[in-house]
Image (tube, rainbow, N blue to C red):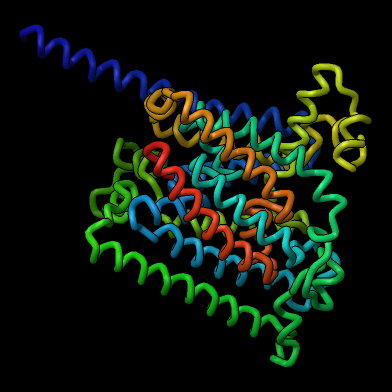
Length: 440
């Protein structure tokens, strides 16, 4: 055996050992998180942690996210993710209508957000920031594992943007009041609740709302196909390698199945899910979240609270923070692990970590994106700042102003989507002039 053979054998052996260690750590992390969560968190907060774990795991294993809907399309020509989001939106609407139909709608905190100038500007700012940072609010959480320098820089300035946006969100009429409203919408955040428009349909408006949602999804899918076809015709379509890999995963081989084997482990814990598989899991998790908590999925509001808590470490009193933000001091004084959305966000980080550990890919993934230039840091900071401030104007991020409102039959979600895309295109045009964009 020559030296080269020995060296290769050693590298392979080391690689397998490292992979095994990561897998063991991954399952140990699951057990530890569940034990500690169950022991120290209140039941409702523990539920939020578990849901966050699910969201983080699904987003990571399906290599999906909301920011990529625009960024992938602009940078590669692929609209698969955008079309998949429409699939996810529609099936989520179908699932959540099971709770709302013949139920007490007033018992739910529906995110029927107001339609106003704040929604339009906030959506464009958010889309603009997504292009610069290649992530969104939830994407920042998952990317702390897969692209730490970029995500951490984004998170810091995202928190600053949210914090400085609090007083505007909490006082400005052009953010709080809606141009249009409906009966149920006026009882919620003040926007348009689609079932209110179809009370004559025989199913309390939900049939008409679902059909209109299907039309909106169909329009976006059709436009996405047209755009992708034009990119292919112009030979500017490159596609996403991961999307192609997801589509080519071989079907389950039941004839040669062995319970204890590398093949079975890979299928259960390593191989990526398809975009549609991820969409179904996320839709189910969202429905469970809404059914149990009577509320939707939010992510960005705590970022400003986190920034405020950092300021408190340097001696800034909670009363001063609350006075600036036009909020109650309780928001800043509340212990971190008593804030449901904060814990859910931490769950997203941990869910992402668990996937890459159990897949044996954490070390490779975490260390592959550690380089950060000064120019990139500036762009990520600007991206985080504009996204954070934009969430306050639009009353939410991609989950709080887009996904949850659409799932709650709010017209505001669709308007947010349109203006987010406009902001995302503009942001990508500028980002391309500065540096080669990071693919989402």
